[in-house]
Length: 149
Image 1: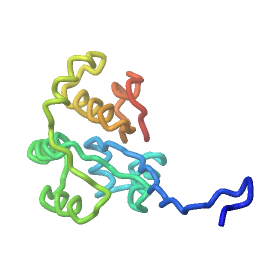
Image 2 (image 1 turned 180 degrees about the vertical axis):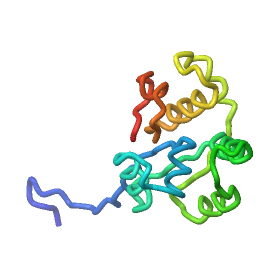
Image 3 (image 1 turned 180 degrees about the horizontal axis):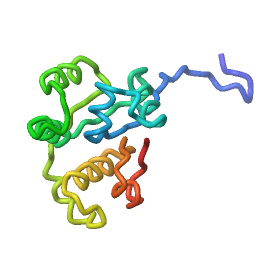
C-alpha cells in the first residue's frame, strides 16, 4: 500500500558517532596533567576532562616523550618515565603518535616557529586538524594553530 502524499516511508538511519575534538599535548601540559593538574590553565584542564569523558582525544607526539626523558635526565623535572608511559597506555583517550615523514616534510613551511620541537608539535596539530594544549608563547603568538590553556 502506498503512503499518502507527503508522507514518505521513513527508514531509520543509523546515527553517526559524534566527531571527537582532537587536542595535541605539549610536554608541559602532559607532565602537569599527569602529575600536578592544578598547574594547567582552565581551558587545558577542560580539554583533558573532555577527553577523559570520551568526547575528545589527546594526541601525544612521540617527541613529547623524548623531551620528558631528557628533562628528567637533566634534572629539570622529577618524574618516573615508565610510570608516565603506563598511565598513557592505561587510558584510551591518550594516544601516542609516531613521528612521520609527512610531518617532517611540512616543517619547512612553519619558519615562524623557531624551535624544532615546537614546530613538530604545531605540524602534528595541523595534520590532525586539532588544537594544541600549550602555554608556549612562540606557538601562541604565531597564530598558526588554535591553542588551549
